Length: 207
Image (tube, rainbow, N blue to C red):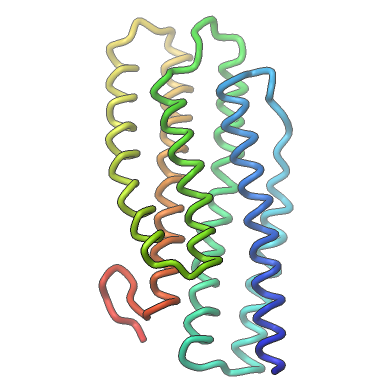
């Protein structure tokens, strides 16, 4: 009964952290699409949530000594929270280089806007598959990463041949790279959800 309560508390804190991270990347992406939407992103809150969740997980492992599915859940959350924190970091990165694009005359690339829409949905779905322990949705998130990888390559190639200022090309390339990394971390979250459900991580049985 005590373990169940602690797991419920852990889940609530993790979802609060996820809400902050999702808001931060939504704000960063919105700023890229429209510079008037630039705002301050407080990643310190995300870092505080990460430390709290790690402490809660370790406390459960030491005091409650969970086994089987509960042990997978706690160990999976310890891994998942790291990817969630990195998404928060990259939201800050996107905002940083978006601000450097504010004075450019060129408009945001349409290809990047498409990447943004898909990546934001991947992050939302990655957390939804955690909430529902949905392996099918998790696999769908993983498959979508191929689309983002292709779009990343295409966007970079277009920036190379496009007649743009050096600062525009460099800062847009960095924005695109961080978007691609956010998608990678969404995939990692989906992979950890699969592990929580059946003990497999990247087709390797752990326990």
